[in-house]
Length: 296
Image 1 (cartoon, helix red, strand yellow):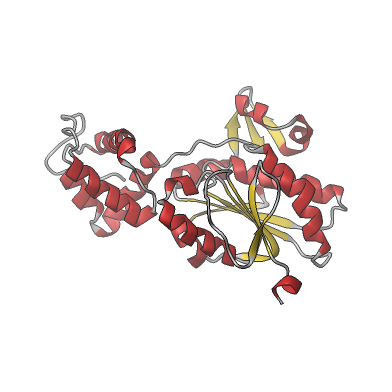
Image 2 (cartoon, helix red, strand yellow; image 1 turned 120 degrees about the horizontal axis):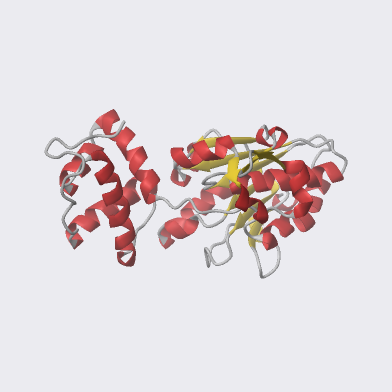
């Protein structure tokens, strides 16, 4: 339930223009709690999202709303709702084909050579938004592992900071036009029509994907098992450059030997890790964790 300001009501006057001092205070709060940075040129984005939520809750004063967000459990509930207004949830099925081809054609064959025949594949989709990326990984792994013998299990953990986006992801129900994003080769085995204007990811794949509300800042403290594949695209761009290396170091610690970390091309430059090496061609940005033999 949203909070209503004590000095205003729904439908009241809009908040006044946000000055630079007020903007800086909101930027600090957002970065402290989520790690997301908002540069000055993105001020209109922050202000519009903030005003939209304030209108919904009847607030007209930035300072009063700010203080109520700090009001214990009551403020925590409203903060979660505000984050949904301030985070971008745009995503697509099969969004970056070169990265997916890298997993399918180069990494999986290499990974299988170094593990036991019954070892499952554990994947993580970071910043999964409404679930398209996570289900894409499930489709890819399901198809590839089936074609390689069908005996190996897999699972995808998908995380995001938005509860609203995760609710959509768990429902796995999408408007029919989004079907065009899924290659024809996957559609028959991965989706089922729902009415005339929607489709759902089939239950077999839904059971392989689990969703959790986790901030990337706290990913290493979440109860995540050691991972074989971490897919983290279009997430780091929202964090300060000096913090990106710290976040990647944390993700690297979650990887098993021969595990793969896949980033968005151009998201980070100059980062390296003593146990990871670049993997793949120029169209992708991925890092392979060294095998146990190499580490020894």
